[in-house]
Image 1 (cartoon, rainbow, N blue to C red):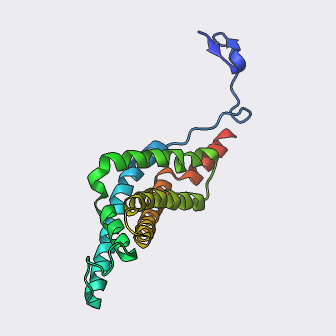
Image 2 (image 1 turned 90 degrees about the horizontal axis):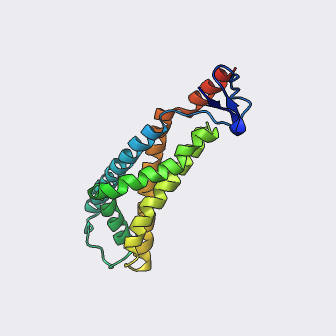
Image 3 (image 1 turned 60 degrees about the vertical axis):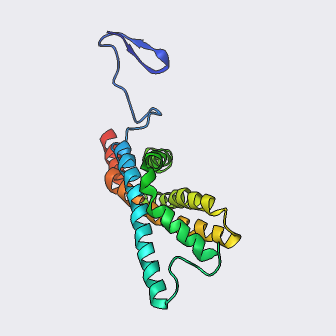
Length: 194
């Protein structure tokens, strides 16, 4: 049987020397990254809806305690109206799960999903980029739909959606770290080489 070595070198049966993985530029395979991205995409959709529902409950409780109108604000398109639109959009994002979940899978796979293979073991970059991408995805979507309001309404929708997305991104990053455990896997791979 023929084996191929580096640079196309042909080795016949029994003549292939043992490969030295530590000397080459091959990177070891990190396990459970695809599973973590899959579960984090589903978790992101659910977390955004749950965080928005909790914010809506707190918001309605505070407005009723203050004696204000909960959904009808004095000025059309003000900051609070934009925040209300962002909370309602985020609370019902699971209606569009067939768009939200694949986009989240793609973003996670191309961002924090590549960190373990690069050798990043500290949890801070995972949390940071999870929060950044969550804020960009949710805040960008709510800000886009809040752009039809006045400037205050746009900023209310953008900031509230960004807050919801950042919180959901932190939850997803912690789930990713719990599943992949990059520090443990990379240290195990480093000890296996010797």
